[in-house]
Amino acid sequence: MTFVNSIQLTGSGYTINALPGNSIALAGNITSTGGTALIALPIALYGGVNHAVYKPAPSCCLPAELTISGVISGLASDPLTFSSSGGLLSNGNLDVTLSGNNTYMGATMISAGFGGFVRLFVMGSQPASPVTGGNTQAAQLSGTGTVGPLNFFLIAPGTSTATGVLHSTGDGQFAQDAVLRVRLNGTTVGSQYDQLSIDGAMQLMGTNLQVDLGFTPAVGDSFAILQATGGITGTFAYTEGQIFFVNCM
Image 1 (cartoon, one colour):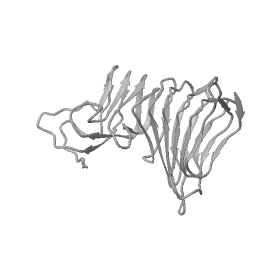
Image 2 (cartoon, one colour):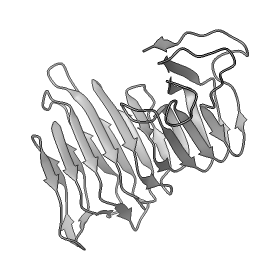
Image 3 (spheres, helix red, strand yellow):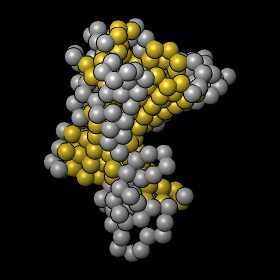
Image 4 (cartoon, helix red, strand yellow):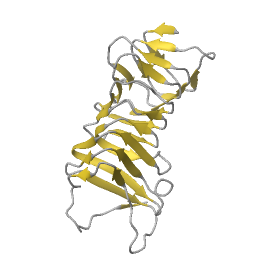
């Protein structure tokens, strides 16, 4: 195992790998100023600090797209924050994809500063890490993998190009005035429409529902966009039977 203080990515097209059996212990942060990069080696969080994956401001005019396929672990409950800030002359977009079966137990936090927009796609599994934060629609949780308990603001299951099911272990709740964003392209869950699936109870607090409609539904079609094994309490920001508008794709 190699101990490093930080990883700084400047430019595009990087792949960071390691020989089989090797890994890094990360004491600090991962920074990307813009462009695409892949980190394919295992990462162990250590030091008892809040680690961050972020795009600083001011930085490159390009968005940052980072994929971490190596397993992220941690002996302590060190939190991991994904954040970005922009500005008048810089691009604050940060997309991070986590595709490994991560074992770290600290909280996963997503936040966007001024001019920033962060999307975290969880495509693997990290059931021991609760997801928190995102008090703005500029911080979004997406993916088709598994995360820990949720207390979040904007959730959009699936990927940027395809519908899917995002799973969560344990009870969860949407933050006040939060948003659940789903796409309806047919009547088959996962492959044709998005779903948030909770292994536990889910609390709604006047949650806003945003629907993108990509097909013509028939009378009687139904969609289970939110499922919770422990039941659902609270309501969306609509009364029963109320008509609301959808975005036609």
